[in-house]
Image (cartoon, rainbow, N blue to C red; front, side):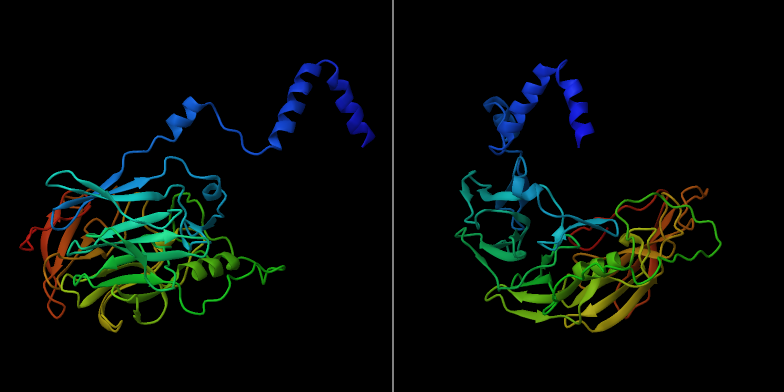
Length: 390
């Protein structure tokens, strides 16, 4: 301790002025956070341009006003970095630094604007119009979890549905059913318990096995590191699918809890297209390349048709895609037709070929798939006309 004090003393004399300034700053820091000049505050707190979505009937615009800067409370929220994603363990959702703090509607006919009555303090996300344009569903983040709320488009009043919490670890936690009466939601499984605790002593070494084949991969961030990471990732990513009745907030569970990459509803509302993540998991690639099972489920969660069992994608070329079927999606507005894509170049962008991908259409779940087009570049997406034509 003496040697440290002598060292500091030796430097105090030549920079006494700087030391005084440092002491002053240190004393002021105990008074809390300091605000910059008002001119800077006005610039940083200026509301950003709101996001806009049009109601399905085309009569109203929904304006989502985001916060300009995150609060200290939001910045201080914990972050878990697991399998290529960043989670907020408090809300069990993807980590974000901005929230929607205001919702309003604008009537297209005359420009009349009206604010929705939303919970305070507002930390909203994922506002979605119902297909009949009569309601808007959104998530509200609290210190207890992610709540489901619905606003009446006519009265602008909003209410919370149920006392459960959403699982937003895959992004949007709820989607409207075509009947505008139900929402398909990912919920925190009942009786989940507390998160797994990190053991004081590792249960064993981290073992990675190589197949001996060359498989160059990118350097990814936030990958799983050990068994405890795997346990945490499974804890936060496991969700219970459920139908939520917006009239009273009651729920009807769909199958058993699982880890879903995505789930979508068929245009006729009779089926679900599920992409479920399966083992083995990997320490080398993010969850987007973990094995998965793509299947069509009934409304109750029973398997109707298995479409794909995708293995671990640790050998996909850099900048490439997986071989075999990928990007399954419903053909809207057809009742239960599906489309997907298959690579014609083994998923390797370095391979010279006339066509990169081909599009496959399944007209009905009991029919046979057929090729409908080929693309010279990598397929990105498709838009469909009102009659179901591409």
